Amino acid sequence: MRRKRLTLHIFLWGMLAALVPVGLLFLFLWSGGAYFAPALCAGLILILFCIYKIHFLLRSRSHYIRGDWSLTDLDDISGTDFEALTCDILASNGFELAQSTKASGDFGVDVLAYRDGISFAIQCKRYNYDVGIEAVQQVYAGRAFYECHVAMVLTNQYFTPAARKLADKIGVVLWDRDMLEELL
Image 1 (cartoon, rainbow, N blue to C red):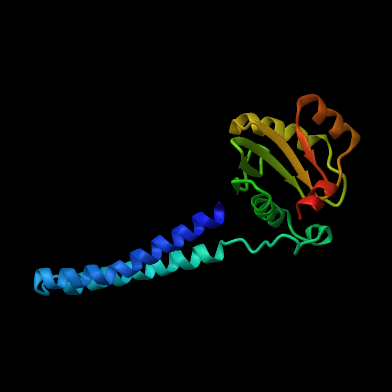
Image 2 (cartoon, one colour):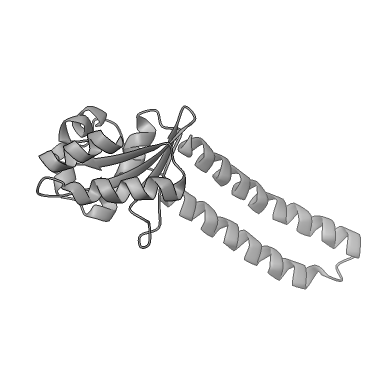
């Protein structure tokens, strides 16, 4: 879904950039050249802006290909990169939409995802040790804030017994290292 939307946006910006010269030609013929110089400047600025937008959209495309990453690769990336990669992994595994929340003030939710009409609030934890109870508490509160159906914690490690016990009690889904390996 995300790639189709990006492709559509790239196409639309490209069409706009292609229509600018046609509009300039029409203006030149209609006005007899009176407004051509200011319109040419505005048109060039618009074309440059369209090229910038296309370049930005092309850079934001996912470079994740299923099967190219291993768990040891995920152990070596930053937490921010782990969140971005989580969006791509979820999208490649059937989620219609997966997007990161803002970096600060995210209310314990790093990724918002949607699949089959169900919304997911996901806390991503790229750790070198087992994830504790705090992540479960944070995503449970964040799920309510974002009005999502499911709260989930996704990690490249495992969960402490206390985190598992609390998650079972309050209905938070835990995806650990083994589940992440299946998604890769």
